[in-house]
Image (cartoon, rainbow, N blue to C red; front, top):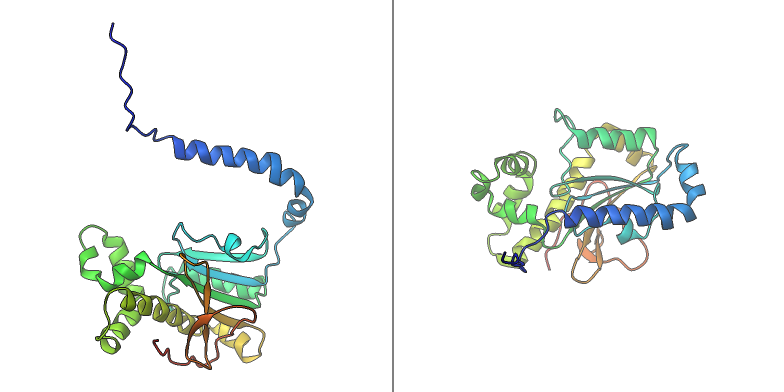
Amino acid sequence: MTAPQLDLNHKDSSMPIKRIIRGLNEFQINYFSVHQEMFRQLSQGQAPEILFITCSDSRIDPNLLTQTQPGELFIIRNLGNIIPPHGNNNNSEGAGIEYAVSALNIKHIIVCGHSHCGSMKGLLQLPNLVDEMPLVYDWLKYHAESTRRLLRENYQDYDGEKLLRIAIEENILTQIENLETYPVIRSKLHSNKLSLHAWLYEIETGNIFAYDAQQSKFVILRSEAFPVPDPLATLQPN
């Protein structure tokens, strides 16, 4: 009988989940055992002060990025870190925001986009998504139309990576504007009990860029945060 030949190019499809399970085991044996008291306290309730809204992209880990512990961030993630305006039906993002602000008494909301965002690449080529990814098309068409129209009418002279960067930045600022349509947020902003922050995470450098209203642009965040004023200033592209 001839010995079976090994396929060196074959990849075991179960390997990713096996790696995840190994990670779970390491978490339980190493991390959890050392931090049992923290998790015991967390089991009694949560009290985060920051709502972190970001993209579903696998290259972003909010807790890793901010070096925060479990219980410190309340996180909402979706394609393109998009927040539909108040009044949209079946808006799970809105429900999460309302819970965070009303029930958890969140003090800061961060909208964090990122470089090389696939959702914004899709928005710039929206018609190409209709057949292969109709649900993604509907999501962007319905909830990112304001950004798409803004780009089409104000940035005709830009293309390529420069246009993508502008799209990412403008999309972040659009979500800040959408957040301001929520009554629970408007009330907190009026009484200075809540601050909104617009951030952009640059994957290749690890830098965070924050929107600085005084300069009307995103600048590298080094120490103090830049709360976004109400009403929002206009972005000035570099």
